[in-house]
Image (cartoon, rainbow, N blue to C red):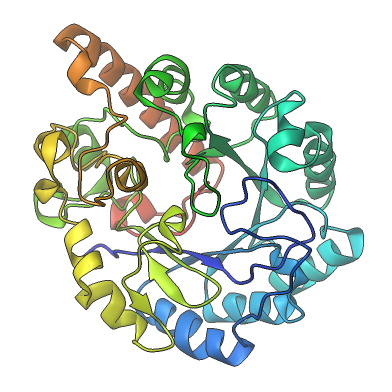
Length: 382
């Protein structure tokens, strides 16, 4: 049996030493926010999550390393058996800090940095120049720490996205896309629309294996996925080995106040419950939100009827922010504008890219031995 919810994105704090204008958590150095205690995180989140089958935890913020107990949390997660990831703006990744991290978790960590563009736009959206992130990446390389890049997709960087991905490919860096949503800022106008996805983002995403696991729409035939995964999606509904398309069902998130949501971009808006009041197990497996959202064949509109409903699922956060309904069809999907010949062309490119991703994932030890055959995802580039 596959493990739903194998990956937890945990925003441990809203405190940050940056004030990025479009920050999804609303973090700013001008205000101090209270954090959950180490004991609460241990007893209400980390131990229960591991017992439920979560095996990868992504510590985030704000800026995670600003927590005074950050190293203690890394040590606890490592001892429990988690694969560990950490998102950072790079400012806290000093030589002293990196040496301490290595002494605690060894090679058991992936650090994610953000790059939205290789021009002045990065300063506007990330506060720092692109070179700042590249310098941090070089430092991480010296410490032999695996890295990942997060790119937030919006109307701002649609015309530069192709160049950004080409540059990242030169560095052989995996990346994942994050759709911009007005989670903590009132800028609905910056969300990409169907035309931007169709004309700028999607043509790039389906050609590059190193960003393979995290984009929508995902034109991978169910039969092709089942052939390599060992899953039967008509029964299990969610692709887990590896996760592709929309990660809802494989992925979940917890905000600094303990609210649990199917995706980080839902946080502060859509919740299945709070771990301070309700056991995590009950939230994930009994709440109305979590039990319904994994039923992809029951999604509304074209998403529930689509031939790729199990390998794609539509982006649930785009559906929510554009329609107010987490179960609605994804308004940015353009499959109904394509003829069969165009669909088949994209499908073949997706199949090739997916195979390359699996090949490189195995070669690069993204999956541990026998994971694909046994159906257990241990780590990812997400």
